Image (cartoon, helix red, strand yellow):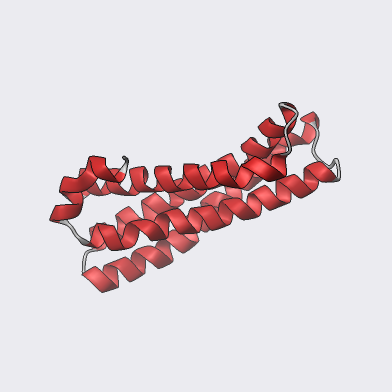
Length: 149
C-alpha cells in the first residue's frame, strides 16, 4: 500500500524503485542488532526503569551516527550512479530517519512485549521488519516526491 501511494513518483523517477529496498534493508539489519542486544539484556535482567531511558538515548544516538555515516555512503553511490546530488541527499535523509525508526522500534518493542507478559524474542523481529520496511518506503518515497518529483 505504501509503495502504491507513490506510483506516479516511481514512474517519473525509476531510480527510486532500485534504491528504496536499500533504505529498508539497512534499517532492518541495524534494528535487528538492537533487538538482539535488548532481548539479551532482558534475559540477563540488565535493563530496569532507571537505565531504560539512557539506553534508548544511546541507541538513538548510535542510529544518528550510523544514519549519517551509511546514509552518506549510500547517498554518494546514488549520486555517482544516477548523477543527481539531490537524489543522494534524499537517500542520506531517508537512511538517517529510517535508522532512527529501526533503533526506536528495536528497543521499544521487546520492552513492550515483556511488559505485556509476552516473549520479546518471538515477536520483535516481525514488528521491526514491518516497521522498517513500511516506514523506509514511506520516508524515502515521501522525501523523493517532495524534493525530486
